[in-house]
Length: 520
Image: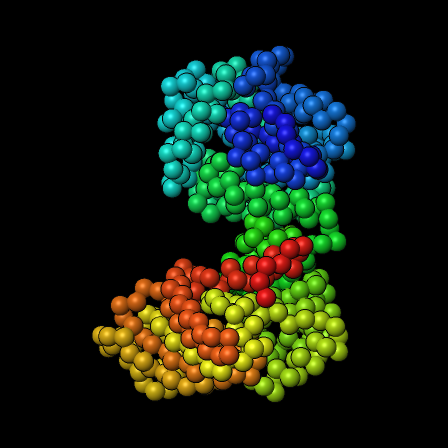
């Protein structure tokens, strides 16, 4: 299979697959890249293999196919092992590697265990036609729909016994782990969240061992994320390849913090959700050392206990560690040459601090970026502020567990567990709301910043029947009126924040590397 125009991507299938397994990626990527997806020997339209099983021979086949044209090489499972072999044997032909759900071979197994593995694969090779549906269910993630399972099985049926046995013997004879330290091209390691064939742990090891590699986990996918989650897979590949092709446009990101929001951001950037961006440094608080170090290794990023040093390795610092971190470090980040994305927008409600921070940003030609967070309608409020915005109200409703421990709740002795109906527990200004609920009402701070001086009245409601974080915004002015309501699901990692909040930061980051901007 070959289609498209642009930088060349060589797409390599796995042991139980074929070139047609890349059709969904052709649909998504052929508009911007030249895609080449061969059937390996013994698969699909290719002849049966000749000679003894040899991974070097597979690599030589691929080199002959490229005909001296360097390519970005993308492989899944055995295809990823073949990509590593190509990079090792013909490094001049490999511009970058995308290694998805990679096997490194089975030669590390004990002899009897390796023999059992080979015998099991040989038995499967003899029954590919009848066992394809069963095997598809074992390969895919638990949420794979029927059409995905059918496609995996259909691709498997294009494999022939001779090709399947040949690849089995190659895998059994290979241990590619020692090769990883020698790979010297940019590498993206991809793994399905539910991969039960090789497993996430192996992909983490590969990401840590290959210099300049980063790890992207595809949520919901099993061993075939290019088929199961084609949009997510294509987004990861596109952002990575474009970054290799256009390195000057890559936004180098330092993330301050490693809590729930920070880890969503780090994972999202690795998957390409933030566009052409890369995490180059992570700043850790004292309690986060092990967590930060692990994330840093898997992104080939630096880990720092001293948050002041983050701008040394990044053009943008994303704060995801709380308002105290903003107040302590943001001015220094700006002064040392980095733009700053502030997620704890409540810190900017203090007018004295905000003026001082703006002054530093102006003096050093940097920007302070504030994502919309868990709210919508910010474009309308910003536009309305230029045309007679007169009143702005926010009503935030959360389940009691999302408000537990807030200073206002503690100071006023509010027993959230005793509430049986929706109860307004706070009414007041944005400044008072931020002090009383520093982990809950960043939305109020964002609205106040967007309104540019128009007072925002805030109500906070605790509702034991609520399963969402609900924000209702009412705005009126010379332009008319509008109402926005969001029923946000809480973040699985932190019920005090909405799942939408880190996604808004990724969306803003993505915008920084795009040519087309939509919205005010």
